Every structure is written in C-alpha cells, then in structure tokens.
Length: 344
Image 1 (cartoon, rainbow, N blue to C red):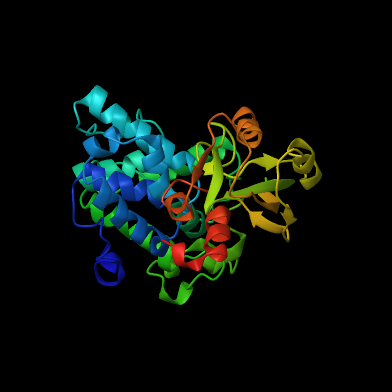
Image 2 (spheres, rainbow, N blue to C red):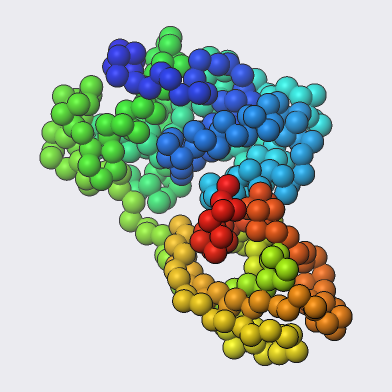
C-alpha cells in the first residue's frame, strides 16, 4: 500500500470515483486488454453512454459499433445485457455488494470484487490475471491454475491477506504491481516492493510461476470472404449470435473461394481473388481469402434477388458507414486500406 501511494497509477480516468458504472465499465474493458488500448475506448463509451440508463436504452448494434476493434465481443454483449438488468431489475442502481454484482451478466467474481472494493470499500479479494501472477510468485504457489480446486486454494490465500483497513489502496496496489512490475515475461524484480519476501525470487524461479499445465489449444480455419461492391457501397451481413464475432456485421463467408464462385455464378462482374491473410484470435489462426467482386452500376433485378435470397438480412452500406458499425478488425483494415480517406 505504501508502494502504491508512491509508485502506483493515480491518473487513470476511472480512478478517483466511486461511481459503479464507471468502475464496472473500466473493469470489463480491461479484461485481457492493455490500459493503453482501453483509454480511448473508455472515453468514447462515456461520451456516447454517460450513464447506465443510456447504455441500456441503446441497441446492441450501437454498443458493438463502439466496441469494434477492442475484441472479445462477448464482453460488449454482456455489458449491454448487464446494463439492462441494472435498469430493469435494480431501478438503475448497481448492487452494492460483490455477491449482488456477481448476479449481473458477464460480471465474474474478481470483477464484482473490484467494483465492491473501489465503490463501497467492501473487504473482498480480487483475483484477476495480474493478481494471480503476483500471489503465485510471492508464495511460490505450486497449485496448477488450470484446475478449479487449485484456483479455489489461491482465492483462499488472497482472502487471507486482506488488510483490515485501506482495501481500495491495497487492491489498486496489487493490480499496479502485476501490471507494471511483476510482468509475465520480463518481471522487474529489482523494483518490486515484496522482492525480499518473494519465494519465487528467493528460489530464482520467478518464470516457473504461476503453474498452468493445460495449454490453450489453437485451431486453424480457412475461409473465403466475399467482398461485393456496388456504386461505392459494400454488402454486409450480420454474423450469427453464437461463435466468433457474434452479432457483428461482416462480409459473407464461404469455406473456399471456389464455393463462393459457384454459389454466385449468375452475378455479373469480374471477381478478383486477393491475397489471403491470417487473422490471429486467442484460440484460432484464421486464414481469410478476400474475393473482391465489383458489380456493375446497372445491377440486374435477378442479381439483387439472388443476394436477398442468400442473405435476407444483408444490406448495402458505404465504407464510411461500415466503419461506424460493429465490424471485425480485419474488415476494418481491409476497407481502410482500400480507401484510406474513410478511416475513422
């Protein structure tokens, strides 16, 4: 806590407030995302949705559009659902305990604890990724954190360390220590306030902790992206409500370029296969092969009917309008590269 007062972070826009809405928004955005990335998104979100009531009243499309590029889109959908739950079930007020906050969609145990600690001073432990690493190293915790019973053991340890007073400073200190000193790949042990009592440091085995034997299995996928353009517009379709990029707008997708050519053989124009590229997600290496298909200005009625039959919810939008919608990051890059003047 003394270290945090001198060396911790004090000027982040979500600090210095006990407004649960602002703290909750920051905690959700910071899940698996760096502070430097979150700063701009946080400011834009508050500008567009300054209260939980306004967020709840927005459409999912509006929320996903603002979230576009931040990744892990289930966070945005849960954010929207949780805002609606606060308004409809709690009269616009967030629950004032960690237990109550955990009942909201997408609010896990650590996020709920952080909100309760910072906004209400509740004496409750957090255990996000950074804090897991700090505690595992400080105590040379040898439990396998891919196993639920060992996670529970670490929760118990975290709870046993809580100070009687100053939970806000203590919680922020743990977060700051993990974010700026006890780093995953290059820990700065010489700057650590607990280096003298850190068991992993004493054992010279800092990189051995935390222990997690089950590795994330990465998969590989190959798809073709149908990039239809007509009179300066692009054809977008909504993605399914489940799976990668759920609920976003994107280009029609096929298993292969040949499949796209066959399905749309009656369309006029000259399709142009573009160089495939790999988009890396947390669990997936996805090779996407764009097929650019410029359609003539005078589009036969049969062609328009074909598109509506294949994608009833599809729509033509300008590139600038597309960039204001909830679209995947690689599509944003594709459209911007095609016409840098529409970048937003």
